[in-house]
Amino acid sequence: MRARHVAVIGTGYVGLTTGACLASLGHTVVCADTDRAKIQRLREGRVGILEPGLADLVADGTAAGRLTWATGTGAVFAPAARPVELVFLCVPTPMGAGGLADLGILEAVVDEIRLLVPAGCVVVTKSTVPVGTAERLTQLLDRPDVAVVSNPEFLREGTAVQDFLHPDRIVVGSDRREAAEQVAGLYARLGAPTVLTDSASAELVKYAANCFLAMKLSYVNAVAELCDRVGADIVDVTEGMGHDRRIGQEFLSPGPGWGGSCLPKDTSALLQLADSADFEFRLVRAAIDTNIRQHKRMVDKIRVAVTGRQAGSLSKVRLALLGLTFKAGTDDLRDSPALAVAALLRQAGAEVIAFDPAVPPAGEQAARLPFAVAGDAYQAADGADAVVVLTEWPEFRHLDWARLAGTLRTRAVVDTRNLLDPAVLVRAGLTWTGLGRPVRSALPEEEAPEAVSSPAPVGAHP
Ligand code: UDX
Image 1 (cartoon, rainbow, N blue to C red):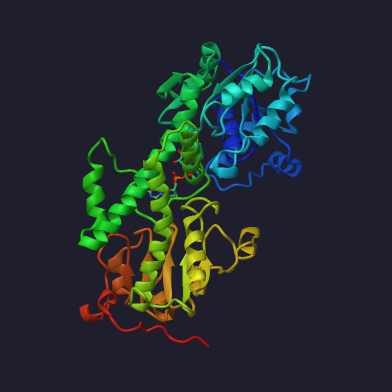
Image 2 (image 1 turned 90 degrees about the vertical axis):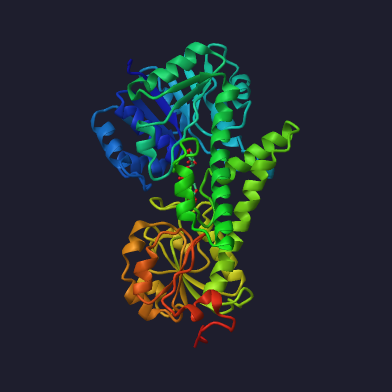
């Protein structure tokens, strides 16, 4: 593998992972960002995002002299530096008006580098971009001596380094074959299956993959609802499904809805793309609708668990929410289903207090939330009526549930991730309500929440 000189524009979660991992593969990488303070922090070795292994790779790359930092986009082409052979564009493409990706930042960067890119250089888009973007950027660049290549990333937050260094596949698309091969060559050491294609196909792979995952999750959430209605157990159902290699065991856990910075954005963008191609993509539309409905279903479940009635009131009910991030292993709150459920609970009149291991009560994230954040689960549950698990942080399994049972006004725990061991909770004197599984109650059968017809034992609050 030939070591290349690479520039990465944008040091967000994708850019920083790309830069640090390419440096670890032996390439020389300069990472640029317009945020001066961020670059300063990176120079001091402070990564600023919760991503296992990333800080070590940044430190190793910096120590080896293969990873350097630049403030401002143009600085990566400084005349003294060795000519850049490949430029990775890793800037945000947020959801814009009507659900379509907003390419404003990407286009501004291309405009800025247009006259600075050395002849023969390859410009690579890593950001998720609508089909046709490579073509558009080629026109904007207006540099026949510079090729544009699409190389979508498939990194999951929380396992980004692992995903980068052990990818299921590498996808590279361009109408200039040689340039695509150069990009694929950067990853040669990884030995991953590589799909070399045209730019439109490469751009579509990312959307098609993420929307498929979203459909899979909405499907499993719907099957879990069916399990609730017919008395089946989703754990056994998904295990039975997952052994079929055509389906696979992954992405089969029901939850409060899928969220994060990618799936919601990419499903909307694919719908828009289909729309603009005069195609009604009903499957993706249904996946989104099912997801929105899932948030409401969680509130219904909580209502039944706490009040014992489908129509019970959550007014003044105090709920301890465990987990706020969109999944475990990240501190990211973007499009988190936990926040969507919290908002609906508050609309229904409930008081919520949350705890999340990645959201410190005195931090910036907590300050922006419209409800209180506690320092630990016990504090959150103190005086609460019930506990609701919204993110699958493994440590919640090992809480002292007997201690929590002592502080809760009702004995209800609603586990929207099927994370906890119901037997442990029942032994602690609690009633466990999950998704697509029978309620497990410490109470005698006739007093269990589902069977209760009178209002719940929710006490009035001082
Ligand atoms: C996703 C894609 O997986 C990744 O390939 C792409 O590059 C970026 O988008 P990410 O957003 O980090 O990654 O999260 P992911 O792990 O895919 O989870 C997405 C959502 O689905 C989360 O809210 C998660 O909690 C939920 N989920 C996932 C489930 O509810 N059940 C599952 O079994 C798996």
